Length: 505
Ligand code: GLU
Image 1 (cartoon, rainbow, N blue to C red):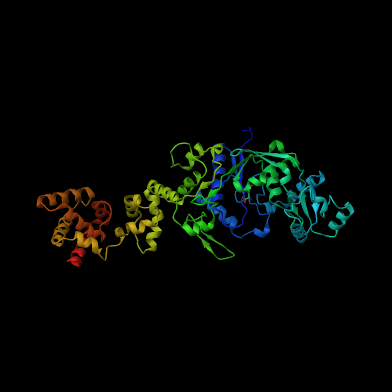
Image 2: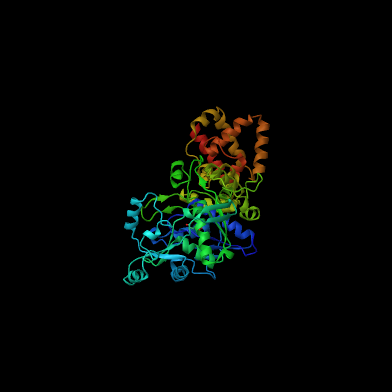
């Protein structure tokens, strides 16, 4: 690798919600930048005004904020190489388009969309290139006076890249190795449109990578076909020396591995493909997001990091800091990565288990409030500590834990038939008296006293404890019984036992 300072960029076009594949691209850029003490730039590629979607830029920024991916420079972050929004860099691009024209590396073309369509109908596999350009309406085929006159008359035109045929173009890709393409398969790409005075993606992308001193271009595989053209553009500008290195990341595939992951797969199989919920401003459609679906950002990061890369060991759980240490761009796979969303759920489960009880309580409190429950942070922290192993999502905590906060009003019929015996009412009445007499209501003391009582009276331990659980929970589930009573406290525990006795017998 070269001695240059590592500078990478994530350069989305604000055309809608950020796809989860884009999130992975940004993550890999982030890991690579951090690992090399480099910079990560956030650039908005909005030169195609037809595809601009309001709110998309804000959505992307908020997504990364949620995920904890931090940028060093760029739109909303500032920096020395701005502006970072391409629509604000018109004058810069104009200068470079002119440079290509002046050096004979590009030319002006007047062919209208209708004329081009007609050509495509007339000639099978028509391509605007060395074999056809002299038959078209451009500055190479027309006299200079005519070209000048058309421009002076305000005719719309485009600037096309002049591609020399039959040349081998080599792209060195960190992941894919050497990719060689014959330039004859490339067409004379449009670099600039006079109509909106804006460059196309290709020109703006290359000029910005150069001016922003980007050292590595890490992006999705779908951009690999553009890479030879980009290499030729660097050459046309005379920037080969500082051309970034390329790394094209593998595609994200459908869960069954057949084809590219799409939003429809998410809808069909019930998982989000966007980091945050997205409200499409045009259609009004709402698409689910990882955040709103209850995923922890750490889990999403860990899950995505392993879609296309692995540390070469069996280690699966890795924090962002560990990923920074372990990540290796050159060991990314070439083959597409199956989007195994069940694995995503598994990661969330693991991260919920690892999460600090207090932080988890903060996430659970709003769910409790939405269900009309007022509880102290302390109690909620204890409860989630007892129950977090049993859930994959914060929202599942409600069903799993609600008996801590809401006394049972009904008793599960099946459990009752099985667990509530002839003598249960009597035993529970005794038990309530016993617990009432306790000054020390700690779990340990309750357990000691209750066990002693069962032993002294020679009661059937299982029968007593099962009935006890039914009075507290309303069914046969839940954690260790004295963990429950400790949280409930004496008064509530006694009330629940006595109420059950009344209802059940
Ligand atoms: N604007 C392109 C995108 O939306 C950027 C491609 C690149 O990284 O070169 O992904």
